[in-house]
Length: 393
Ligand SMILES: Cc1cc2nc3c(=O)[nH]c(=O)nc-3n(C[C@H](O)[C@H](O)[C@H](O)COP(=O)(O)OP(=O)(O)OC[C@H]3O[C@@H](n4cnc5c(N)ncnc54)[C@H](O)[C@@H]3O)c2cc1C
Image 1 (cartoon, helix red, strand yellow):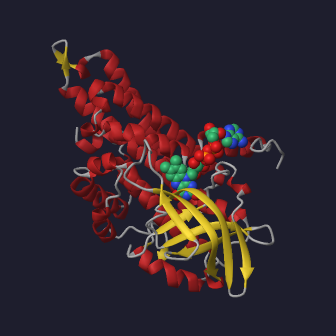
Image 2: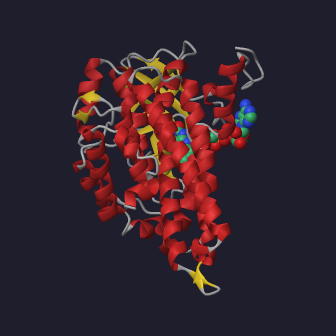
Image 3: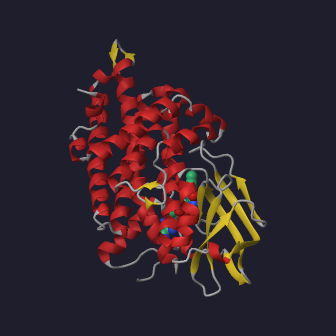
């Protein structure tokens, strides 16, 4: 059996176009050469691997599904495969791309005016400029809909005041999309450019997951944002939700990528680690774990592929994306834990890679909507009753 067949048990590759296979392999090869050999050192030092950014830019994947403005305009299936490959190498790199290409660039592509798209997107597609997405606040995570950051019109600018927390790329970004409540009570998106007086960002320290990508705590104190930087087509929080839905399916693929890496590492280790005179892969209990992992990975592959084809056809709903995010993150979490177990003590040593994946899946399980929140979105869809805030929709 080939290496690919070990994790593509149902020959999903047959369902992919040649372009999708090409882009997947382009990312896979770059990750194997550039990311895997050096990422543990960055993770341990909690350092962002700036040296990888030029090579990442050359992959030509920034902006993912965005058509034009220098972005590749790939299919949602291709975007999913790319997300899985990056995460299979490293969750931090996958998160960096998720924030830049999906949360930040898509906000501009979907909610910006033509002038804003032309101004911001091309340098972001070339990765000469990096994006961030500032939604979560210290007091508002799952209930980000209640965000308190304010935007007040003053002449030719909006004045922003408030705080943000957990903002990926927030300290290094050239453009941070800050979501703030306007004087009409509606949430709008404001592109805050690097160096804006009144904007300060501090790297969050002491993280036990995704240590090779930085999140920021941001303070906005009278930060003046030119009127032309307010995303012109953002009318309310519903528009922000649309961006989250369109990123969420890639998070499901990212969980699949991490689970795949964990399974591959566990299989390899089990075949080589001998105890009681034979490889541990020869024991029934170990084979049961490996078989269960493969079954779960296969179901995730089919779910993610189908969800992306629905997204490509314009048929993906918010609840469909939530179902996949929830299922894949919860399943991956179990697979990575089982894989770590099969490494014994080596499973907590960074050099074997599994320890990093084991830590990283915890953050992916939580961000872009927790397990509970995804369940509540699906629950609202199937019952017609919203249990999110205890109120009916
Ligand atoms: C590594 C990382 C990167 C991130 N990157 C970004 C980013 O780039 N930009 C950004 O804006 N945000 C980002 N976030 C924030 C992320 O989206 C939030 O952490 C997430 O939405 C959860 O919010 P919270 O941490 O405040 O948890 P809380 O909302 O406080 O949740 C705590 C617990 O309460 C539960 N809970 C909450 N409400 C309900 C309810 N109604 N019913 C049942 N249970 C409920 C949750 O499920 C969870 O179990 C990031 C977070 C992390 C960890």
